[in-house]
Length: 391
Image (cartoon, rainbow, N blue to C red):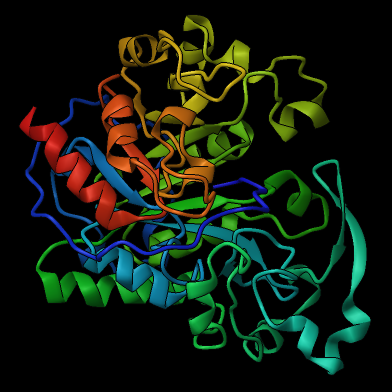
């Protein structure tokens, strides 16, 4: 999930999980042409015949980058904790290495999420690039082989706000997506049910432009691990509709288009000269177009309930109703427990990094009829979702 947040949280809540009920969700059948199955070699834990997104409870809890409220994001430690806390789906963001491996990082810029700056042997790799119109200086995954990346260790992205997470700095390496697939298979066998994954292609136009396209190697791995079908326990996602459309031609895996602020434009639209903004995509006509190649949308929460100038929630938009009319599910992003991230009326005290009334915010968002939500704090989200199911 793309958010270039530089400020964020600190305090911890007690970690707990709730038993989730099972509520079915009516969805259109996933479209797309299934690619050749010659590459399959694993995968019975990634799917169940006749099953689909209907397996997921509603509201669905998505572990945002794992349990990133408690562990450095996109590490096996973060993913494991999110699963143990009861998240229904665990999210990965994918970027490539120089030699074409897919690894799990929120951004290809690894300056703030690894200890790369402490490695003198890589000092010369620090460079400045323009990615999706943003000029960035740092170290980038596409300049490292997988073997080189494996010498690094993950660190907390926002240590000033999540100081407790720094306890785990250096504990985990950068996982490949294939390692995550193997982890999910093992956990699925242990638990007797598939472990759902939510997998995003990051900056796909940028990477295609430098000869490191994401979609084909991703589809190859999905076929290898049996997650290429409409009944796969995996959802593909991207902020670029073109990437989702490309994936729809490679695999039948369920797909969701992520949506940023109303005035923003997907980067593939910018490159193609398409004038449409997100505001155009959330109209009935725009949603109908998205439904032609995806099964849902992942909008920013502000598209569901806007905030006023003081940061307080206003009236909900018609997005939930309009998306459901097109058969689309909605999994908005991102809920966090800390005051700095909550709507103003749910903040408590003056410390921006202290926990506010996250349960109150969850109630407001779940009341709109959304089908799920991304959260850094899976335990809080699991309890809130259980409350919502009880009505």
